[in-house]
Image (cartoon, rainbow, N blue to C red; front, side, top):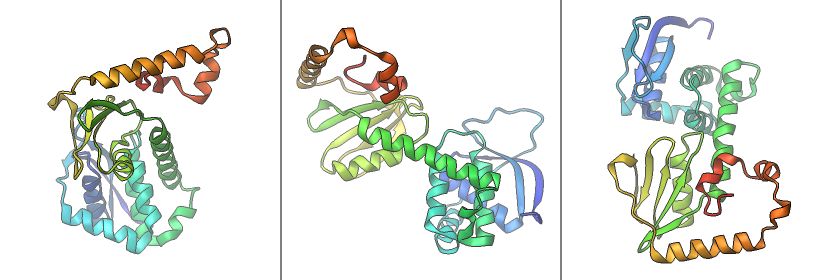
Length: 252
């Protein structure tokens, strides 16, 4: 990318993966790299930045999406998507450089981990995937209505969509809500399709009577089998990080 031109611009986009792919399209076509890329939700206006607002173009983003699979590899698409979900302030510019370089050199881009942005994208993918994998086994659904269940999570990364899709495959006939309390987002599945909406726009139903009964029974069982004299919080945190405790029924 040595022949690319670095321009003194801060790209502001809508914070979607399609919006980022639109920036990739424009950058690759013009062979230019912006100084920064920032989501409009996170951008704080200041007089030092020379900003340009990029409107999401779904035709451009689809061309880049297809082009990644065709001209780089599927792994590059997964790397980019999960890196995008990671909580990192520089993820967009690293993904942009990774993809633009990938279009020039092909699948070999994933072997060039000595390049800082390649190494960063691959590590961000691992970070997001690792947390998503943990929550697939940890997430606790609780009954809030007839065939409607609710679960709350506090993830470091924005993994609500892949996590929700996992449970659609596991529980295709059950209606459920997964609530990301760190981002005020809800993944809502009605048994046919899903939506992700701001949790401030909905009212979460109360737990059903049966749910409260079973929760009390589980807490009673949990406390009965516990040996208080051998309680070891430090050991507990090694197996179950404390940040996840708030979403457990049997919170220690």
